[in-house]
Image (cartoon, rainbow, N blue to C red; front, side, top):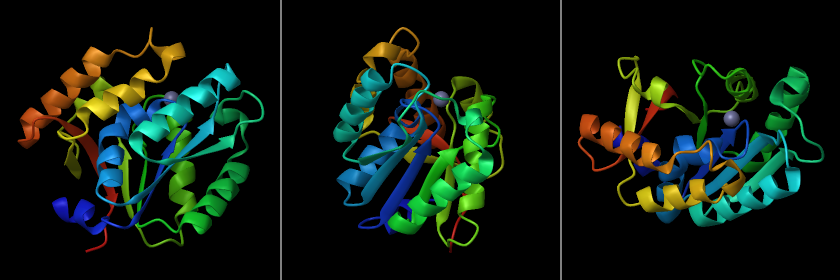
Length: 210
Ligand SMILES: [Zn+2]
């Protein structure tokens, strides 16, 4: 599975999250690692549910720590993903994919129990219908990570970027009562134990070019 990430050295990566902080929690370690390894990493946040100014600033700080460019797709007014017509969201993602031409896309899992998250998965898959790229899905809750029997799961070594991931999550100060940094570390350690790394993130492999 290392091949997927080796290929991205110098490549283009597009990661898509429904809300500010989703990407940091689910994929922050791998995104920071790919950036360190020379990939151009773009983080796209679909919606800001509340406190737009504050949350925009937090997301910017986190993206800087990760070494990624940040795209806020609907930042003008607070909204949820389900408020955006699906055809409109797919069109916006089409545009982003066309601009970035990613080699690897990372998005929410279809199995995510959060409605907004699963909508972003569906829109991403539709937007990539004509784009030949690798596609991974991140698992954004400990409960989902515990389902490690799922077919096609892989693990990314984030040992070198664990601290950056925690700093990036910690940038979302308005959300810290909800975000548990100790749990993020514990989860990465548990995923590392399964995969043989000090710290790891788990992903579903949705599409791979070999
Ligand atoms: Zn979310």
